Each structure stands twice: as structure tokens, then as C-alpha cells.
Image (cartoon, rainbow, N blue to C red; front, side):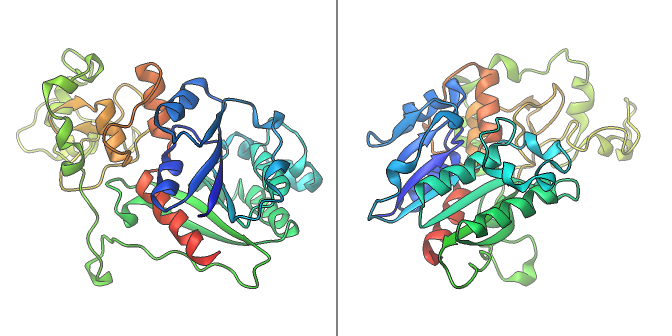
Length: 339
């Protein structure tokens, strides 16, 4: 069986996907106490959960393992705003710099020497202001002996009821060729001859009962309650200006973020579940309320019954920061197929 070290594990979305792909997770590292406790609540007994700063950990104990080993993880993206940080001194890529968690990911890879690794991050890693970071990461990975393939994945293309784009890097040590990009399993384009994108309806239906209600879901008396109730399912605030016989408040197109007052449609994928949404940022339920925690988790394809530790705010952050489990399974499965 392939074994795994999980870094920056969060609430475990990528870990769940890895386990479903047939991987045994030996070690999971997560600095946030609530997320680490979430991992403990759901992890297998053989998994070592470490609520530690990765900068203080050593991974050389895994280097001489005769078994197949992979490393997976998605480092925080804060360093990407520091323009030119890596370009000026590439050697800093493997220094113990707390501002540079991508460097810590590669340090762990260098110490553990896994057969392959899967790196995950935000779409904006490919933005012109951040591409120097991506280029430096790839260059250093190649120096460590890994052939890398970068892929921008939309979670909806892999059976997740959510439009969520993430960058994945597939890397195999001592490989003579690059891993091909994974092929989508679903599509919004009928010409692709694939199953259509999946709607959220069946995923969140089990949590419609009153026993799952939350005080935070109520919008009655709120600033934009009236406007929200008039937004059709699957649309946002801009729909108000086009409604016939609507005499309430409207907003200038482009004057708000596109997810302002966005309401789910049961037959369509959700927009991205945010980690720290504003009070009137969607997605909202088509029944004119905020989403419940188990509904948000279901849209992220966490298993039914998955337990989260911490306050409601912390749980939202954990869910919103996670890799959708089905997407993680597809990406890890692809890595295993080609390593």
C-alpha cells in the first residue's frame, strides 16, 4: 500500500480523498488547533496527528522507507503577495522562513524523499504577480529530482457540486517523462460527451430538517433580507434590476462582488464555499437562509457524519479552506496511476 505524509492538512479534505484513493496516511501536520482536533476526530488510529509549526519538524525518518511514499498538501498562500521574493534569492526557497510555506513543503519533500508528491494551491498562484513563485517552486522541485506537471482543476469537472478552481502540481522522482494532466469526468459542455456538472440539491437535501437548523442561518430583519428574497435561485444581486414588477432596491452591475446575494439553484453546482464570507456573501440556500455547516461540508463532499471541532466561525473557515474530498480523490488517484 502507498503511504502518505500530509502537510498543511487543514480539516482533512485532501486526506479524505487520499484515503478513498487507497492511501494510508502515516502523518498529518496542521498548525491550527481546531483543524488538528478535527483531524483527530476523524483520523484512522495509525495516523500521527501533529499540531505543530512545520518549521520545527523533521521528516528524515521517512527517507529510508522501502515502501512507496507520497507527500500531499496545500501550503498557505500569504507569501505570494511578496513580489519578487524568491526571484531575488532562489536559495531562500529551502530556508526556514516562516513567511514562505512553499519552501517548507519542499524542505519536507527533500528530507523525506518520497516517490512522488501532490501540491495544491489557489488559482491565483498562476497570476502574473505570483508566477515567479510558481516558477521558482518548479525549478527547485526539479533540482530535487522531480518531474512536475501543473494542472488547473475545476472541482465541478470531477463530480463536485461546486465551481472551485485550484492549482495542482503532480511530481514524480526520477521520472523520465511528465505526468499527463488528468482528464475531467464531468462537463458543462454536452459536446464533451461527459456527464453534466452535478447540482447541489441531492448533496444538501439530507440536512433540510429542523434538527440541523442554526441560529446563524436566519436572515429575517437583516439589511438585505428583502433583496435576497427576490433573487431567483442560481443568480445574484444583478438579477434584481431585471425582475418584472419589482420595486425594491437594485444595485449597479459591477458595484458589488459577484457573490453578493448569490442564491443556490438545486440543479446547479454551487459557487466556491468561502472560508470567511461577509454577512451577505453567498451562496445562500434557495429557501432564503444562510447555509448550515453540514450543508457547506456536503458541498465540499466531506463524508456524511464528518465531525468538525471549534466554534461555528472556525468550522466555516475549516470547511471553506478545504480541498473538496472528491477532487482530492481524483487528483491523488491520478498521481498513483502515474508514479
